[in-house]
Picture (spheres, rainbow, N blue to C red):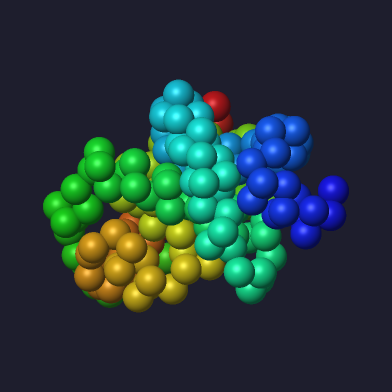
Length: 178
């Protein structure tokens, strides 16, 4: 499928093009939603909301950047909207001067499914900020704006997320976590 034809088909509300796009990108976009949203059913709901936004707001895509990137951004934003509805990020503790040492040896043995399981164990704030910063490439300023928190809260949550992940990796290395 050529991107231009897909976009035109979406603008024409062509159901066949919508189905083809869904079939091709649903697994990718669901993976993004699952990184942010702990409950599978909620992630699936976010995926549906994502495709609804893609289909109804296709006229907003101006061709700047990749179409896939635009869709992924919608998936992230929809995931964040659900998280904001369910969680209050302003109730986090800000910390400073915490150091994180080098990654555990267990990191090299992890598969994608293992990483997702570890991320699922993180508290919502840690997981969300870790995903946004490490995986999606947001800056702390952008995260702060998106979530309505301070830059320092974003930084401290990332530090705490990394610390918790390191601890889980150490436990896994010792065979305590399955």
